[in-house]
Amino acid sequence: MKKIILKIGILIILAMLMLPITQVIAAGATDNWDNNTTSKNEYAVLAPLPGVANKVGDTTTLKKYIHAIFNLAIGLSAVAAVLMIVLGGFQYMSTDAIMKKEEGKKRIKNAIYGLILVISAWLILYTINPNLLKLNLNIESITTATPAGGTLTGVRTATGVDLLSGNSLQADQAIRDNLGKVKVNNKPCTTQRTSKCTNLNGLPQSMISSLKNLQKNCTQGSNNSCIVQISGGTETSLHIAGSEHKPGKSVVDLSSKNTLNTYLGYPTPQSGDTVTKDGLKFKYEVTGENGVSTGPHWHVIPP
Image 1 (cartoon, one colour):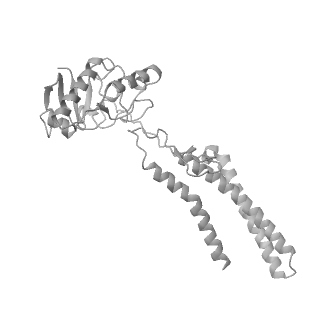
Image 2 (tube, one colour):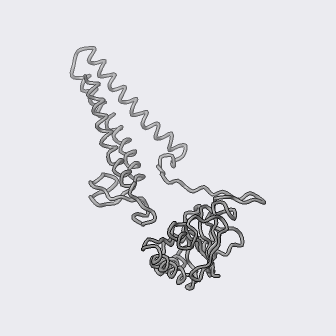
């Protein structure tokens, strides 16, 4: 009976520890990178969590929570061992029955063994490498180099020339603000990563005006549902060598959207389709084209 009660108690404790994790994971399901609802996967707690968030409304991350639970588990193990030693000692001294004394001694031994096991595991990991005790949930992007004499299909990496900060990042944001209803598929490149960033710094005002005009005309012809979305801008390193994509050049890529395709006269565009409209020249490119294209899009330049 005692074993059953102990198992139930352990399950209840584990459930109490895991409940906040499920709440954090559920909150993470609503995270939206494009809509900027959160930038670092931080979540506001609904109740204070000792060692993680001191009051309701404080923010935390899954990484911080798991790290706190790890430290808490180590501390609780030590406390439990001490309590079992005390209980075993009390049991040993409070009875004259040999069997009870042996049970008390066994309880003390098991508690000491458990305490030694926990401390030894921690010391071994710390001796090998202290970083083994640091939980890291970040998944770093893998950078793949282009083989000599070859090209990579579908893999793009932002390099130092495209990493924005300070004034260049402010200039990029100013252009985004000036685009009006024209969308941008990704945030600017601020760290080295594959394909998931789009720069607009240095995009000429003439191209900005042309894109806004395209959005306006397309919307009128598509019953207010046309989507003009930039998927490639001035990020030089994310395009083939010698590409026109660079700051100061009126060149962008636009995502292939049904309403835009229809407005351009190509409801189902094929690779190489070209059209000139609203003062811009459009050429359709597909996945793998030019060695690095990662999705169907319209390559747009002045005529």
